[in-house]
Image (cartoon, rainbow, N blue to C red; front, side, top):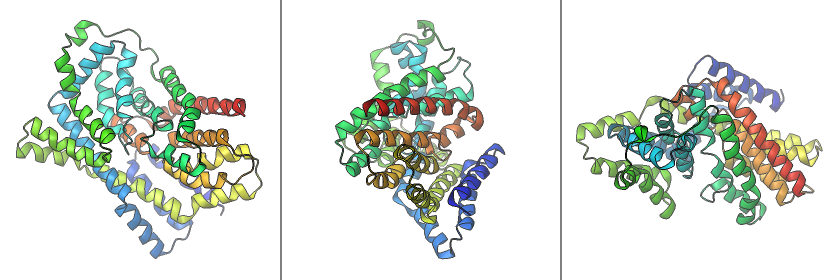
Length: 398
């Protein structure tokens, strides 16, 4: 059985199980087991794969980040900080469209695994009374946090791409910036339908500078720790949570309830499922075999620039995965230049945005309880337009 057939079977099974409303974490665990069987992995390889998935630094960071993000969310809700933030944003920006997208854009500046969960309640709060569907809110939260990853040096994907290709970081950012800006325009076209007008003073109240500043202090603290001191997000989240305990004078009982809320079993299963599936794809040889197959068939450069990074990005949902696995292969192909690598990066990123195992997609869908197919009906054409723009840029620049 070819690798393509094996992967298609796994993807079809995942889509079927998700449509049956099975939790995504369990779906990924089942998909991993199917891969074990398809690739006839021996018990030792299975144990090593599971062990690597569970004890990896990435898994630990993701688990801490997501659980403490939930804690911050609970604290901000209990102390009405989210409402204060939204009132401040409404009063300052006024335009309803700008208010809704402001939080995903702001939180999206953090190179966080699963950080989309942090902005979910903020989008929900700002969309109150606007009759947006669950899918509309999920799309807005998901889409508007991702323009940064193509151009922001805080994200490791573009840094790794620059290192592998020996293309200057500034040049790589310059090449990608058109598509980054295009994402904003596309997001407004697909996610802001029917939203017009501004919030009036009756809805926002009198916005005092002190109140606005104080409401944003928790996020400002988080951004400051991560960006200025370059502290890892999961560590910064721990610092932020315990700082908020002190600032808001939480008692022992309240602290216990917040911690209990953070460590939700479904979140842990979700993280283990994502990481196990990712490790299984890599250790089974699925991703490597697919890449080797395409290169060995003498396929022209253009399809390879699309397929190699796209497939890896789609299967793993991680930018680092497609950069780390596809770019070294592309590096040795004839005719590859800086424009080709920028196009390959955007092709891989399109795969990441469409990936059913992309952590941001998973946690956003879970939070809003959005229907997967309805959400994909918004994401798919948006990604397609983004891809066409990147393709046009590649053809024109070359």
